[in-house]
Image 1 (cartoon, rainbow, N blue to C red):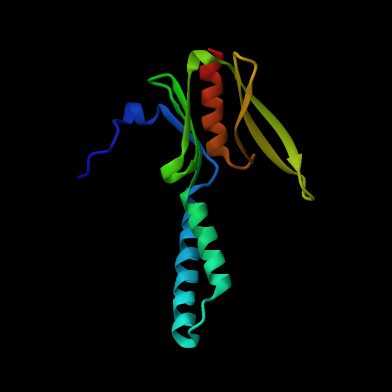
Image 2 (image 1 turned 90 degrees about the horizontal axis):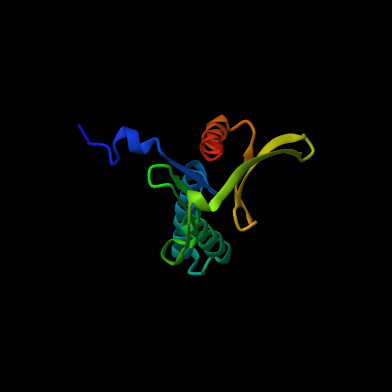
Length: 154
């Protein structure tokens, strides 16, 4: 049986909010594979470079390499924000003591009045950082954010 990377106690103390969900990344990976295969087949038959396939492939590769992620480590009491491409991502780290409070803003958007949740960190310097914006139907992310909000409030 495989041993988990982190013990159960520590794994539950790390919360991550990412711009792109794993499902979105899988979708772009499939799109990259399909456009690459179609481009190779088209080049073999016509001996022309498929410009649309190259553009779609490059866009898919960019999305797969892009990182925009907040990680909250409750054990070490640190917050890490990474943004950029995989190999050139900028990293900003804050301590929990740098955070004054965590806010939750609810709003509706669009023709169908879809409810959304905006998660905001208020730093002691007066800066406000948006951690995530997601549909209110995503109860798992909402529970994670509520747990963090309670942690910062207490």
